[in-house]
Image (tube, rainbow over all chains, first blue to last red; front, side):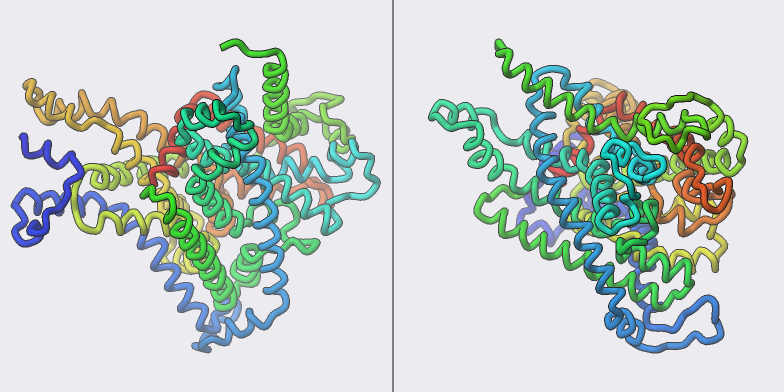
Length: 312
Length: 276
């Protein structure tokens, strides 16, 4: 039994270890693989296989309304998508609906994280209430905000004394969608930042205070640099999540008034027009853009982590 | 430490802003759900004429009650299976030494970043061909895929914190391996498993993309998809009251979960993010 205890410690593999694996180590490998296998298989079967299938579909003329006309057409679907002004407009809408909400969330989320971290009374209740938007179903949040903005039912036009319906204009629609997104996802951002905030040692703040640093200086010179990894993780997750925005736009106006995003476009091609070929080309392009964003962020991590050290 | 009155006023203001900003949309949708149909368009923040008819109305429609049953069933089953599979994987990742361990984590991270819309088309076509379209498993399977990375990250962060030596200690003291696991390790692991289950459940309960694409009837349609297809009294009037009431019904359990388990949710999300 004492041999098991050894495996608890992070074992540093000796160079010769590979050559003669003990029976025990081999059994451990087998157990490890068989425990990971079920989860691994589910994840591969429902992500890798469909994305490969999407790629295959995207090379075909595959329209469910005209199944007889199916045939291999190479990259024609991509040519159609990439030369269509609609696609580029939708990419632009998506970028706007990613960059503005995520920037706002970072600022508000940081403030919220600081409040949740430092609050001097009522910490439990404050944290719990601040978390509620995170738990709310996105569709519900979108409906609540939509009805709040709509001219004939909403309290916002009523309060501001607006005559026209703000949701019939492009600006009004964007404003309302952004407010709804920021409300719903800021707590998640704040939670990720809170995790980073907890890693900033209090002693550093105390020391800086003794040396006469103001709260503002301490925030910019101590908190922010130490939180850089947490901020990058939070930004990465929220950016990727915001880029696939679907629910809120769908509920507000299904992409009317110039708010159609790439996800809405893919949905319409696939499930309304039943054009699997063209829709899959859009899906694959979305996948590639998300992968590119992730790649750029992760390169950014490398650069940010390098001077600080810290493996995590 | 003594707090100056200025500090207390400042914090009170900050707390008030957080509370009001977090709760306004909730109070608003509850208020809408209690408004009498004749006053629903009056634009006042609180109902001027209260009524229960929106609630009694939706519970009389099978469209809503079926969707509620589907939502609860699908989310619970997907949560249960994902958490069990993730427990196996996270145990292996936290405790065993085997090649390919990092690969699993990197792969899970990649899935967590995956855009669901990219596989909606292929899944729609596959599910129609093999008869999973508009069924419970047709939603449970994609939910599991996207819940697993979250569950594996959160659980392996929790499992790394467990003092596993206690298992040997108990065995030295004469417990059987079975007893050592269930009497010593299981109680230590339970809070992490429970927290993960909450996070996964919230994820499944929230989904809209898959629900609206892979279901079409009350057989498997979940509440978010059903709400979006509520029929209005006429083509030009949205069923605001019914939508608001249905929204409140799916929101109440979430608010209760969040208020009761706030500490666990914070611990779960920060553990997964920081250590992952």
